[in-house]
Structure formats: structure tokens, C-alpha cells
Length: 486
Ligand SMILES: *[C@@H]1O[C@H](CO)[C@@H](O)[C@H](O)[C@H]1NC(C)=O
Ligand SMILES: *[C@@H]1O[C@H](CO)[C@@H](O)[C@H](O)[C@H]1NC(C)=O
Ligand SMILES: *[C@@H]1O[C@H](CO)[C@@H](O)[C@H](O)[C@H]1NC(C)=O
Ligand SMILES: *[C@@H]1O[C@H](CO)[C@@H](O)[C@H](O)[C@H]1NC(C)=O
Ligand SMILES: *[C@@H]1O[C@H](CO)[C@@H](O)[C@H](O)[C@H]1NC(C)=O
Ligand SMILES: *[C@@H]1O[C@H](CO)[C@@H](O)[C@H](O)[C@H]1NC(C)=O
Image (tube, rainbow, N blue to C red; front, side, top):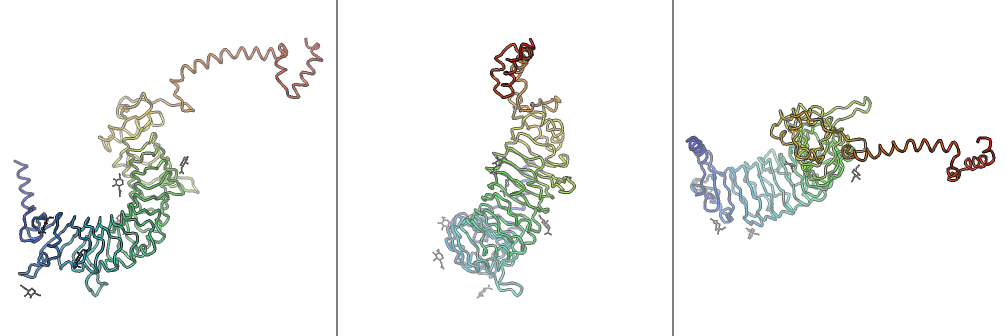
């Protein structure tokens, strides 16, 4: 009953139909979700509508001369090749032309779409973009702008450079996605293009084959808060990040770091709150001070790094050279899941009790006394933070502890054993120890006897082995004056 009621309520405010209503695009080849009392629609066309699209009557009602109210349009698999028609005036706010084999965009194609906030051109064959591809209409206050455009997605194309004037008509862009384009290097034209976007907030440069960021690229976008550099062969954090003004979220997933150190690690960027270092195939160590520049860090994701075995206890804190004191950032979320970590130092973060999220699952934790605090101190906290995750943390070593959960050990107030100085396992060495002890016990009287015998010169053989000059003279004198002693 209740389910039927809920679906009735849902249906009354969102009418879904695949059959065309009054909107020409809502036919066989597009599905439409009607909103605002069926007045406008979100349209998704996955089958061929090329003929429809280029026909003005699809956009403007010939009876009233008013535009049809498409709110959002998604067209894929259209095989457009060239965008060489101009969209008629329309109030759509979202246009998605992903996956249409577009390699060329004629000038001013979108100029009549002055309400369009989001334009998605992902997954096409774009290699060169004309600086006027995004040209809009004449406006006294701007240079023929596409004035509503805030989000432009050009990912998964073939771009390796951008014309430096490419964004002169879209100066208010806040989100720019250039991921998965073979840039290799961000040349000066591309840098100028990006620098012409003063309102930019999110910049996606993942999988662009770049090894670093050019200096000055972050000077102009004063509001830039998110930067994605994932999937690039980067093994040094670009120093130019210190020039950013409001960078809060940084993605370095799947980059080429092996050891993150003070030298190749993060410079001082106190604005950064969220850092993702996930899925780094080669990452082995996060060393002391390597993350210390991120003094405002709140969320740290170090996840799915299949070779990561070492996390320095002092990776995060900033040490004061003069006083020697250290200041940790106040983390709220920490994710260390699915690495190869065996030990975790209790000093890695300052306040485990301030965490609201914690994931340390899927690591080969060694259940020995260095990790006793994980069981004794962290487990009760962890149970409060995330009961589900906390109860699944397990020992990965030594063999006799494998599979025990931390919660079991905590409940039993289990004291984990300690390794000796050389990392040997004492209980396994017991037999050896007994042997050694027996050997020592037997050896002592033998040695004492030996020393006594030596002093008494019972065995000339002792002297024969010793060829030092002193021994020689001793031998010499012993043969001459031996009578005196005996
Ligand atoms: C719908 O798609 C089919 C196959 O993709 C195509 O043959 C047909 O002409 C399309 N209809 C319209 C109205 O565009
Ligand atoms: C629509 O516009 C055309 C050309 O501008 C004009 O000839 C026609 O009379 C208009 N029709 C209506 C219904 O306004
Ligand atoms: C638009 O481009 C398509 C594909 O390249 C081509 O077949 C068509 O003739 C072009 N139309 C115009 C008006 O240039
Ligand atoms: C900085 O970025 C955050 C979003 O991460 C935003 O809420 C804040 O308003 C920005 N501050 C400035 C001064 O741009
Ligand atoms: C990473 O650190 C380890 C241990 O200090 C060292 O043996 C290794 O050579 C380092 N690798 C690189 C690429 O720096
Ligand atoms: C980075 O990796 C994490 C974990 O796999 C994932 O949740 C996050 O979405 C990734 N972010 C990017 C931008 O790749």
C-alpha cells in the first residue's frame, strides 16, 4: 500500500514518457522526462536524430514563433563528424554532445544558446578548436559571450594544445575539464588560455600525460579550489601549487611517485583540505615531512596503493626548525584502506578521536606489540566512529594471529607479543636458545681450563700459533728462562 502511494506521489511530479508529446524531439529516437507540469523536458537521444536537429521546426514552433522548452538535451551516438549548423535560439541550460565523433566545430555554433550553463563535448575527436567555436552574441558588456556558460567538458578528445583565445567568449567558466587529452606539455598558449579564466573553480587535467604544471598557471584563477592531476606521470609535486590562492581539493591518484619525500612532496599550501593519493601503482613510502606543507588538511585518502608499505609517523606534522616542536593538521577523515601497511604509528595523526571517518581495512597489519595501541586504544574509538568497519579489521601477521579481528583481541584484552631486537621470533628460537645455553655452560669450564693451562705453559702449542713479535719474544724467553718458573 505504502509503496503504491509513494510511487503515485513520485509520478505526479515527474511524468516520464518515451512517446512524443508536443515537443518534436520527444519521438521514437529520444526519451523525455517532463518537468514543470509537462511544460519542459529533459531529453536523451541515443538513436540518430541528425535530421531532426538540423531542422529549425524542432526548435521553434512555427505556429507561435516561440522556442520549444527543452531544459536539458543529451545526444550521443549521432556521428555528427562536424558541428556545422547553428543551434536556433533556445532556453536549454544543459547540452551534452558526448560521443558523437565530432572533430570540427564551426564558429558560433552555440551562439543562440544564451541560457546554456553546461556544455559537454566529451569523447569526441576534437584536435583543434577554433577560437570562435564558443563565440556568442554581441553584448555591450562582453566580447560576444556565451554568457551563461559555467561548465565546459572537453575530456576524452585529441587536444594537445589550446588556442590562447579559445575562452575569450566564455570568460565566466567555473569548471573546465581537459582530462584524457594527450597534451603531454601545457604549452604557453594553453597556459594563457587557462589563465584567461578568472572565475575558474575546478580544473581537471587528469590523464593528460603531463609531468608537471608550468609556473604561473595558477596565478590568474583566484578562486580555483579543485585541481585533478590524477593519472599523469608526475613524480614531483609541482612547486607552482604554492602560487594557488584557494586550492582546497587535490587529486594525485595514479601518479608516478615511488617515495614521497620532503623534496618531491607537498610545498606549503595551507588552503588544501582534501588530498587524494589513491591507486598509485609504484608508491612504496610516504616519508617524514612529505605532507607537512598541508597544514590545513582535513581529509586524507591514501588508498589502493598496492606497494605502499611505509608511512612515516612524521609525514604530516610541520616541525618548527627553531623550537623543534611539531604541529599536526586536524584531520577529520582518514582512509588508509587496501595498502600494504603492516604498522601504524599512533603519532601519525594528532587526535584520533577527532575523526568522523576512518578506514584502515585490507592492510596486512602485524599483530605484535608495536601495534598494541591499535587494539587497545584505537579499536574502542574506531568502534564509535564506524562500527561496521572497526569490526572487520584483522591481523595479517604473524601466522598464528592471521584472521583474528582487532575487536576480538580488544575484548580479550590480549597482549600481543614483542619481537626481539633482531626481529626474530623468540618462541621459535627456543630450541636454539637451549642449545646455545648448553654450549655456553660447557664452554666456560673449558675456557677457564684453557686459560689456566696457558698461564702454566702446559701446551707449547698455544704459543706456536701466535706469530706476533711479542709472542716471538715470549717464546724466546720462555725457552731460556722456563726453568725459573717451574
Ligand atoms: C531514428 O533512428 C533511426 C535509426 O537510428 C533512423 O533510421 C531514423 O531516421 C530516426 N528517426 C528520426 C525521426 O530521426
Ligand atoms: C513568425 O516569424 C516569421 C518570420 O519572422 C513571420 O513571417 C511569421 O508571421 C511569424 N509567425 C507568427 C505566428 O508570429
Ligand atoms: C556538415 O558536415 C557534414 C559532415 O561532415 C556534411 O556531410 C554536411 O554536408 C555539412 N553540412 C553543411 C551545411 O556544410
Ligand atoms: C575557496 O573555495 C571554497 C570551496 O572549496 C569556497 O567555499 C570558498 O568560498 C572559496 N573562497 C574564496 C575566497 O574563493
Ligand atoms: C625509495 O626508498 C627506498 C628506501 O629508502 C630506497 O631503497 C629506494 O631506492 C627509493 N626509491 C626511489 C625511486 O627513490
Ligand atoms: C581517487 O581515488 C579514490 C579512491 O579510489 C576515488 O574515490 C576518487 O574518486 C578518485 N578521484 C579521482 C579524481 O580520480
